[in-house]
Length: 602
Image (tube, rainbow, N blue to C red; front, side):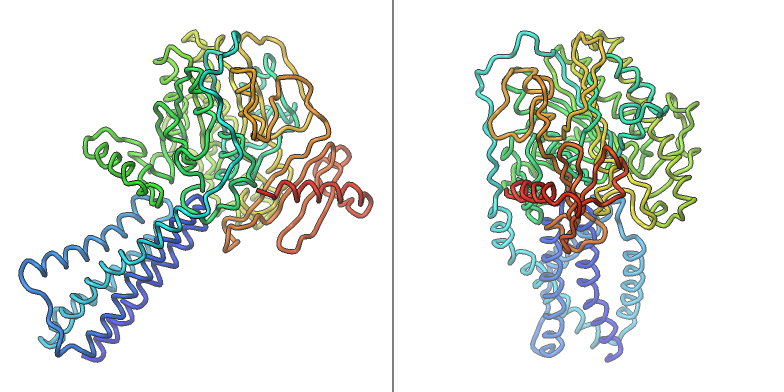
């Protein structure tokens, strides 16, 4: 019996630590759920830790503790098993790309071995285990509910107070407002892999053709190197410093209805809003309630993701349950689908939404192209990819471990993947033209951040390094009836997208938005924009970016944390930002530092 107790104690003692460590690592990787996953980890530590503690108490008091019998025993044991099953199912089905299958399989083998030993043990040992399970189950149930007040408090306190004024419901539309508005965001598309940022690039013939009748902004800067920080700025116009301090709170720190997004701003003008996305959806930013309809074609963040906001109040959770039981919910029905096929489907979904709505309508399309994993889709197969299994697949881990020579090969595959995404955009635009929608549609094409292949040993983005390939992204705006090309070299950023759209619809931009309407007139040259770069893989806390880049005129200023090392580059003379001029231009460094301090003030 003593050896059996040691085995049982070791496994039950390690289980909460293993789960807590895994969930913590998952929280760091999936940054939008950092606060919720941390809360979940606390649940596991408290609940399963209580099981271990009460098991030890049972060992000391086994002569006086009596397990329940009959229906009460079945109810409690069933509840214990349900909680354990919920944890396992959540890890597997809510975050399948990160599921620690080997860890769970190993634990299952250990537990199966333990169960066999239990069955073959002496009656005295089995009786002890039954008593311990009774106390452990009771402690698990109690332990999971004891932190409830703390969870509620943490989900409700420290709310962001964002100074954004909503549009008045009665604000009229401009007579020349576009009937349809389409926002297309590519994930991890750098500017110099497109004809918009590099005239010599042949990877984006669709963008090149569209640019001949659009306005191209050649100096567009991403809000962050992280999708889940850039997209809130893209969709709401709010600068990252207004919501970034709330990392660690639940959801993306912007609860449903708390912040107005572009779809909400357009609703008073009668625009129905739709989204077709991969990887992320507006729910992550608390904005899904603004959209008339939408669908994810694949991704890691599902609608029933674990976050406290989803259960406070309970109505969203109940609504999801009813929808699920009724068989009407198919978001992410097959998370294992290849991104190549999902990309084409995402554009097709968006096109169907516009075709079925007489307008006015707003559509957001977000595709995980050319995000890792990259697919080596040849130009001959870009329009009709067919079976994606025949394409070489390059993962983020492969890029991080690549030699400089192999990194060049992967960069070329990335370029092929860019061409594939451009071809899918071309099919989408052709569909708009065939449906007679193109001439009435405002089209905005951009990227959430770029991709960097110049840092061997690092992942291509989310590495805390704000290089030019990461911060410099494409931006193209096509207005209904526009047939001439325009080129704007002024400094612009993600925060300018919402003001630009609202100005074309209302001729008015709400107070509190940090950006500028880019088509309303000359863009001031003396402005400052910022890119937040963070390492979601290697920094154990997400409270602070690892690098922040500030842009002013031709200068790029970098400050690295936690050392606060400063550097300055002249991008006109040094487009790759390789020569540090901080010692030669102290006044510019001081200006940059002062404006960054203002930017960091929520």
